[in-house]
Length: 154
Image (tube, rainbow, N blue to C red; front, top):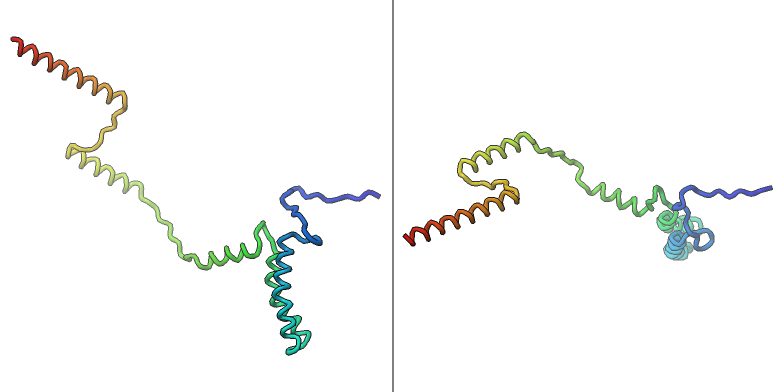
């Protein structure tokens, strides 16, 4: 009888196992849980009894274990807690401000009219036109120099 192995379509879902079927993250979280849980158990078992000591150990160790095991949509528990905490701390009322295009156009037209009346404002001149104007200015200055030199000769 043939045995079939199920292979996931998304290879990103496969996680490398470290010890006993646990990933490195899960192993570290279980060690941290043990480091917090066992001292609580040994400190409380003589005073409150075995059952309550084990219950307290579970309560103290549970957050570390859940951090190691919980993952949904690629987010671990602490990432989700950070997102939720950021949402709680953010401002609740957000206003949507728009810019009135027609008002901006009116302001721009008024500004254009004022600058035109004052004689200022930049003129949109292409590079070719600016070269032509420079050439014509040079020609005019040359012509003026010729006229002045001719007047001096007479």
